[in-house]
Amino acid sequence: MPRLTNDERNSLLGKPGQLARIGTVDADGMPRVLPLWFIVKENFLYFTPRSQAIIWHNILRDNKISICIDEEDSPYRKITYQALVVVIHQPGEDEKWRDLYRSIASRYTPLDWANAYVDNTDDQPRALCAIDLVAATTRTVTWRMPIHGEDPVGIWATRYYLPGTKMRPMPPNS
Image (cartoon, rainbow, N blue to C red; front, side):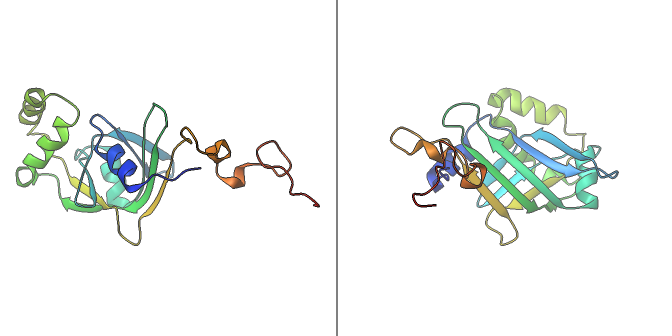
């Protein structure tokens, strides 16, 4: 299964409208996945949970999260992260990073709508959170479907093919 090149990864992370699906664990141990807006700047992926959001409370209890960013169109690029959340700003400090929030919102909506959205929700405190994409503690996996000219056997990791099947024949003399 082909891994993404740095250019392919940066293209997917910078693609307007692309959501991050962020996984946390609730207080009762049940997993929770929530699609959120994000932005990547200088090797940090930023996102902004509201102060009343369950994932914010989950992050406060346990800062280990998973994130999946994937696309619906061929070649179906995918990135997953397992990482530790860094809280850059607590809820209520929104004014310190409001311009970054405008940048995030404008990745998903026209600029005039993004500005109106930010201005009309500025009384709803948010945290500014990030994961360090290059930290030693961050686990990253990327993949995509093979493109023209690449071996189609690469559509899955080798461990998923049963020995002796069409995509993983038994070696000669075995």
